[in-house]
Image (cartoon, rainbow, N blue to C red; front, top):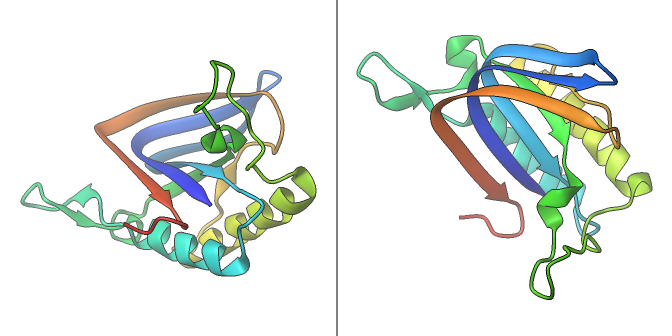
Length: 150
């Protein structure tokens, strides 16, 4: 499982011109799911996202988590995070999980993150053509991979 976590002052998702999710102050999380992902990957990543301390404290240091700022999450499915680019110029996506595996894990991530932050996670629509708008704060962007825990 891969996640790109962007600290934002605002973010939204539109599908067919309709807003499906919108937040202020928090994280835009782009989530990629691969066939090898398990419940353990999901739980580890959800805990990391919910507790990530990348908001400024009174001294300007990245020391506060979502809970400290009453922050929000906009969760977007993003199979292209598993693009294979080694050969040629057209990426392959064979590592990305098919919808029958990815959708339940995505829904579980949404549910678990909501529990961990104590509020509803906003989201896009799995598999839809989404238009994402964001105002990256910092900019601060963190990339995490459950198979490469750095």
